[in-house]
Length: 194
Image 1 (cartoon, rainbow, N blue to C red):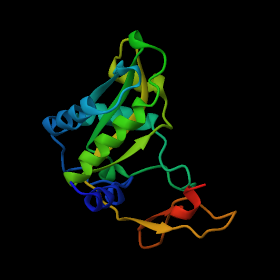
Image 2: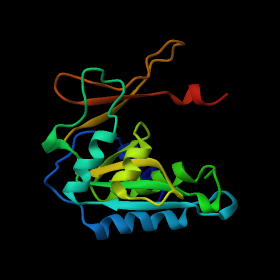
Image 3: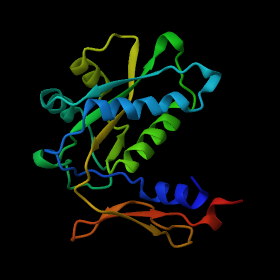
Image 4: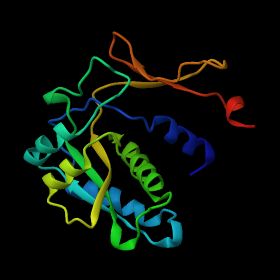
């Protein structure tokens, strides 16, 4: 892969919040995505993260009420029934390997979402959720602490990146226009380098 291809992949790895719910994602595909995490950097090389794969509709329906969707959309409670994800990966910290996963969680989630993008899938990394509720739905042993829920499916919305204006009070909040397009402002390179 060359640099230009990597940049293109990153630009297309966008969070979506509306999915084609009736188009399923196979367990094998999800296992292949989790397998990518084996090759990620790991603090202390402890590799303390584990994943629960959820594809069953009944379990997805029980997880859904424990999730918060798109905090900037004050008048939107999340995707409608036919726009919900067709799978979830629940990232958990195995506390037998420590109380902190250092940087592993983000590195692994990025590896998974990049893999999803190559397959035409999209997702939303959710940190705003009820960990105790999700753990109860999944019947998790107390040693496994849910850290993130990754909603996965085929996208039912378009997401575009736009450059933020270079100004001190520039608005960085994502937003959706009346035509349903999800816009994501990104800071320009000149702002990122000190």
